Amino acid sequence: MARHDPLNTRRSEERLTRLIQERLQPGADKQRIDERIWDLFGEDWCVMFTDLSGFSRRVAEFGIIHFLQTIYESERLLIPVIDNHDGFVLKVEGDSFLAVFRNAHKCLQCALAMQQTVRDYNFSRLQEEKVLLCIGLGYGRMLRIGDTDVFGAEVNAASRLGEDLAQSGETLVTGAFRTECNGVPGITFEALPHPPAGTDSAYRVAVSGQKTAIL
Image 1: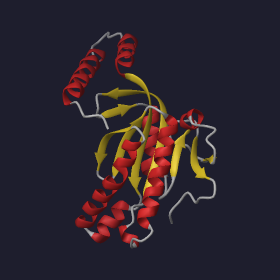
Image 2: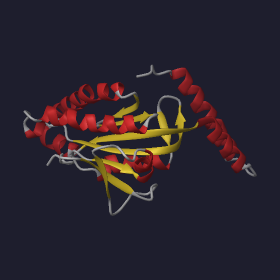
Image 3: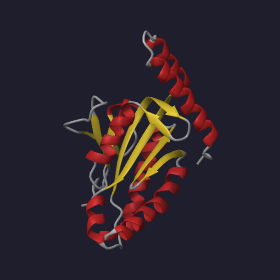
Image 4: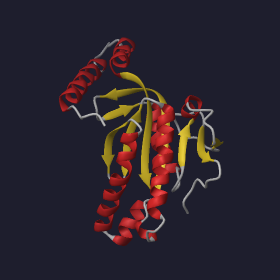
């Protein structure tokens, strides 16, 4: 993973703040300012959000030490997989990761490898020690601010898919991600009936001969 550059991030944030402040002024040419913001920060990325299913309930049941153990294990297991698939982890917050990828196929391969990693890990674990992974993926134009954050409709949709809609063992993707990553052998996309805001459609990734959820 690329080394975090706090100076670059601070400069990006300061530049964006100045433009937002300019946009707030009476009579500001918002269209021109928006074009400048997109020119400065707009990039095409695949975005991944992860979450651990039932995490809050298990914390309440087993306590804060269990919380810390599960966080430690999820980072130990999954961050190397993201690195190996050329992803960049931008944030780790509690039981969730935010990562970005340039290549949609590598992003999908990474998600599948992460799910396989936790399946292997969970095989011999007690139920309360299992890492139950949920993943949401999006693709498209977004604002990347330094090495710490991304913003955009696909970001919001992927977050909703991974953190709110996916069940344990599931990888859900936006319609834009599916279009960018269609035609992968052994992979099918099952349409979800109610896609989240920010995307016209959403899909569950299904691997031939493999269950998509850990129940």
